[in-house]
Image 1 (cartoon, helix red, strand yellow):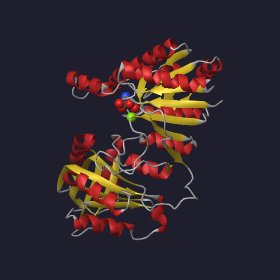
Image 2 (image 1 turned 45 degrees about the vertical axis):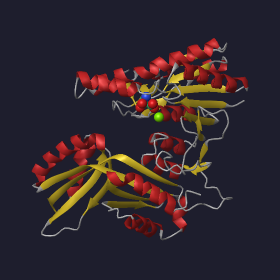
Image 3 (image 1 turned 90 degrees about the vertical axis):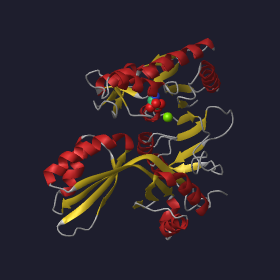
Image 4 (image 1 turned 135 degrees about the vertical axis):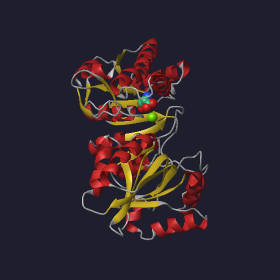
Length: 406
Ligand code: ASP
Ligand code: MG
């Protein structure tokens, strides 16, 4: 008997039929004698609908109130799934984040999980009950409803698995695993049987939307055995996300090509080239809770320098207006911005032992006449910022260049 945490995403919960089909899958696992905790997302499109509705009423909705509202999508699906499972003759019980007590900090709309109380769940599991938990939500110490950021139910599931020391955390989604790149862009993309946490972290952070990045960090930190599988197929092992690199197999140099469209670039021109500049610029951005990705500061001349960084496209306007304030304070010359950029990256632990990957990548892009605007590298990743219009072409070319088509 194993304790398994399963997570079903929005598409898997997208209609009454699909919810009943998830119930049947849960019942099959239960019939094998396992204990089950099931974390669910809202029905697909629901969170978007709720956010749009809020913005229709209030252009910059208060974030506490936004969380009260957007957490309701999951409250609907936990109850529906519990009903469907009960109709199959099993015991099932739904829990909101607050009822479990998923304790988070108070950063509304992107709260972090601090602690999960497993007492209620343990009691129900011992009573042979299937537990259905609302993903994406928690409560802060004052009992305010919080949400964990878009795609946050993945993190809910992994956190649940860590708290319960589950044997496996299975993420059921609309794809059957993690691919070398998005098959909608490259039809030749292949499913990976396994990928390391490190690679997955890079793939997720670079916009491979299969898993929320925080869930992968969590799984790596707490050594949760994590598997991505399709909720539309009965067979298949999905992709296992492992700590260990597979020693028995020839490690490919590049495991995947990741990309992110939702990027924007901001540049402050003519910043005085003095100590503390990076801190003053990025400190004020961080104070507004905006994540910064790539950062470039040019060599100074004539006592000034140019400073560029990228942020999520959704935070472009906010970051821009913060920079206006910083610009006045620092006496910088000008701010320029571009919210039509994308980032494309080659990821692979095999890169560690193979020099020359970067030049191979730059040559492939140059051969297609694609201009690179920014570059950043880590031990297992090379990323480039490009004009958004080159995204598909760049992904296809790099997928081929690194032999991922075969
Ligand atoms: N329903 C939430 C969202 O769309 C959480 C999730 O699906 O993971 O972001
Ligand atoms: Mg998701």
